[in-house]
Length: 151
Image (cartoon, rainbow, N blue to C red):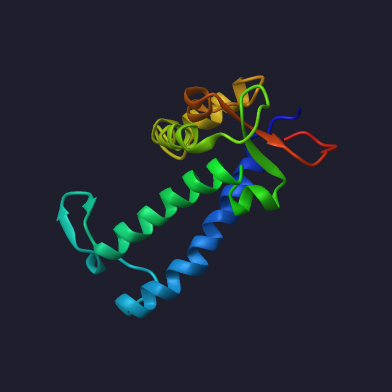
């Protein structure tokens, strides 16, 4: 079993976010009249909390996308294109809904202090290349296609 490193995971995440952009930018243009929203285009409740309905819908879609696809398919579209799968630690199948939820909740910690630095450090320093969310949920990300180089 070959665990997925930082670069392949980053590539998968980049593909997922390009897909979100391809979906969300045109919707934003139709609803808000702009391709990319600036702070003045948002409805702000107070401080940094975004309460704009469109942004909240996009946030829910993104969270559901990662949780549901990893739970039931074992991979997001980006992970699938990159030949990655999320599995239960020990290699016994897809994570399921609860483990996927916990794993993705761990992204909040992995993102600290900024730019997923903690997650990157944990992946690099772990023999199983597990970030905090993986450790918390007892999941791992593996290559499903044979790779000849390391990442």
